[in-house]
Length: 83
Image (cartoon, rainbow, N blue to C red; front, top):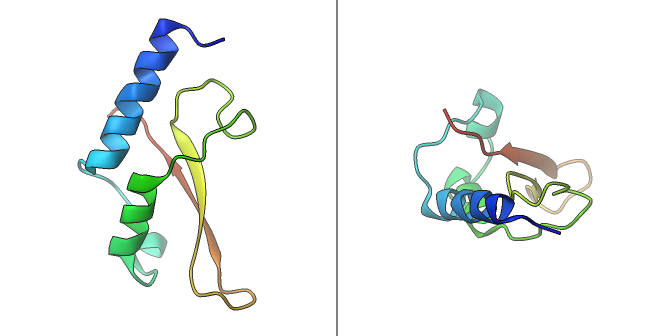
């Protein structure tokens, strides 16, 4: 059961992710093909469920990114946290 506080945190995290405020990415992520497309995929991400969102805060996710060839798809983890 989600509390009002958890629901508010999830709402704020969803808003932050969708609006694409300032982000920090590693050099490895910057080197990936189609960085703009990856950022769009993060903004549109909505696959939250108990296994990857245990606290219901929508602050973590995994996206498989890259061309559809063996060993060329990269799992991208993202984590939202206040600075």
